Image 1: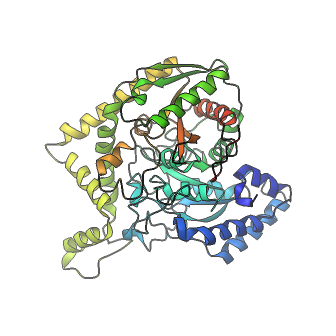
Image 2: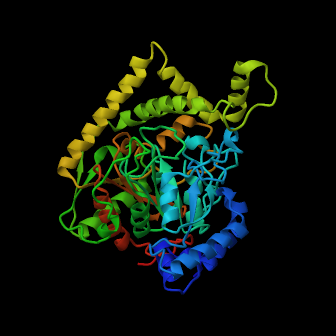
Image 3: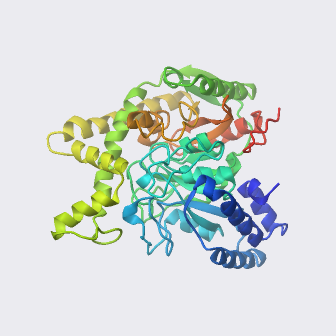
Length: 491
């Protein structure tokens, strides 16, 4: 068993016990990247080996002298390339930011650094987080480690693939409409989106400001709870940050779900859901019932309105957020132009990819005079109704159980030819962002093609402990105990 096969918490314990050095962990991650990166393309930027080794030795001293005592000290981590890192380029996988080096570091990444995490590099993603397959990146397509002919999901596909391939111990992703949970589902790892406002968005390059949230991507639920405990904090620099009384997420790592009320939305189990995915969700429900949970189906309603509402709101916010990339202050600037307006036009035409341009145009349209009321305001009202529907559901249930995606990972190239089909891949994750709720995707089983199926647990606002408890209980009971790339089944 290699060092990159351990979970982040297991590796952290070995480092703390002196069984493994930080340098050995760093070298194991770098060796995996050297061996596998040409196959999977998980990273946009990898730190120089000498710099990582120097950092590893610095962390080792702090662990040895007792300065660093946290569970993640010395463990190699990858960061999605839309989180600012001082002195390391941050591209959002776009040509327009190909040489951008931030002057500060995102708060969530700073929290990891304070805990002694060893940052290996920045992971590939859909350009500006716009996509569900990690195929819209300027730096090439990321491939799914389970089968390189399939996508890893998106937009945090590089982070998901890096964890699944063992090119890091864990990673940070961002979730605007399912961008952590859907790739986690496709790559057979655990991915968690916390309640909106739990993790600071300071330093996260915005796509949809009212929807974006940073979260952990790791090998198991214990890792996710531990990472979330590390990165979550109140941050006065982020106006949407929430001061929470309780950040003790690891206390929910218990198999006790006796009496827990779990609802399965009928709307999630109907048309469009792959039969193998449906069977995996029902099997998860059965496992939790055997542990004493009370499981029943219910009507959630409004699910069919989530995707149109999401794409109107997210595109509107994107058109505003991406206006700053104009070639004046930072980033790419076109080489030849005549006058300011021509420079703007050429820079943005050359710097942005097709999917980003599509969403900027859609966002500009729905915010334009004459269409604002018809589209944008209507989408905001729909968002409020979706939140009300979840509020009503959580009066009765502690957790909502369902699929993370309607199918397993599609083949490369299948989704890009039909953007609407790609958008529909987020049907089970988008509502969670619109309502600001926490959600987690946990591997359930494999389909007949040998690809992972993710099970999603959704909780009420600030009730991460409920979904961690349910997800952990399920994880301990599922048949695939040794969840690894060979899909080893252990009954």
